[in-house]
Image (cartoon, rainbow, N blue to C red; front, side):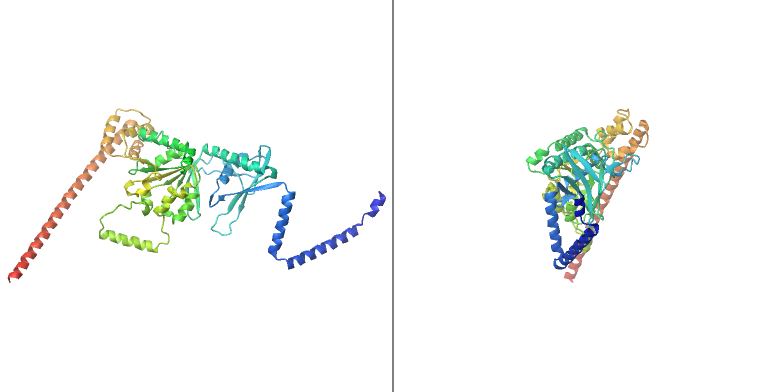
Length: 497
């Protein structure tokens, strides 16, 4: 043993050897840096790292980005929904928040912060998730977000074939049972959808609508949800288009809220007036999620391209002035706006397949102004007329607002409603004035009588104006005829002379 210790070199010898090796390595590195370009050095380093990682590392990493092939990645969204359910003691930080402005005392919902690891165990596999964020190179682009999934190399195939499909099915089950819905509106400056909690109390039970029409809508929605494989077998996108038309105040927006609450779908409210062009429209619509409602209200006012191309009218001088002003505005405008072809391409064209399980709802007060190309099946599959209040709708409103199913004044009120066109919104406004059923119904009857008298006065004025117009037309004809006769007499006098 003593002889063995004697053969060990001294500390000074080791230090001098280390210094010599360090000096030699620095010299070699300096020579290589001077002789080999930087790109070549980076290439060599990457090859060496790939070699050692492939032969000496047992880990494998999956990257799931928030966007995939120009659209949002559904896998990324499923992971966002799934991972908060796997937060455990090993998670060192947690993101909490509450966007429900109506209930600030509600418990916050958990989220995954950036650079935080979440450990999940699945069928004996240990899986490590990390949310990453990469800063955009240009200020007008959003930062890129992606998930890193680390697992063992031998579990790579099982992750793809079993684990990721399990995440998607679990996320779908969570979304179908979600408690809160969101109402989205598009922020054109930030180029993103902004959301708020949607808490509209409307439901099909409280909706003042004809019972048969209500039941047909519910059956159509249920059938749509159950026919995913059918849509795939016939080669059509899994979507459904609805057109709600009728006078203002007939409950079109309330029906949209009732459909959203029934299906548990988020609502994306799109204002076409703010969309610059068709390309902008495609980018906005492809960023919406599945299991959602795309709402375009007042489609007849949103864009000129949605109006009927067959609608013609007799031009006059005022119309010419308006056309000139429109042409002038179009000349100085750099954004042409949404065209009919761009809108149709997303509703029923190739871009309509970018998403599943979607409801597209259009509302309008004037159906006759829409282009027939928008109205055909495949674009607006179901046309629902939201008309004036009916006796059945009145009874439903009385039950909802007053809590009564029958009253001695019901018969008189129903007769008045059948004789005078009144909207459900007007009926509800009168019933809300008083909690006493007798006073509320009397107020409603007075309102209907006043409206009937107003209608009669308006019609009388129109008849009077029509008579005056006809008299003016007759006088003009007489004046023209007299002027013509005077001209003929004058010509005859000149001839005789």
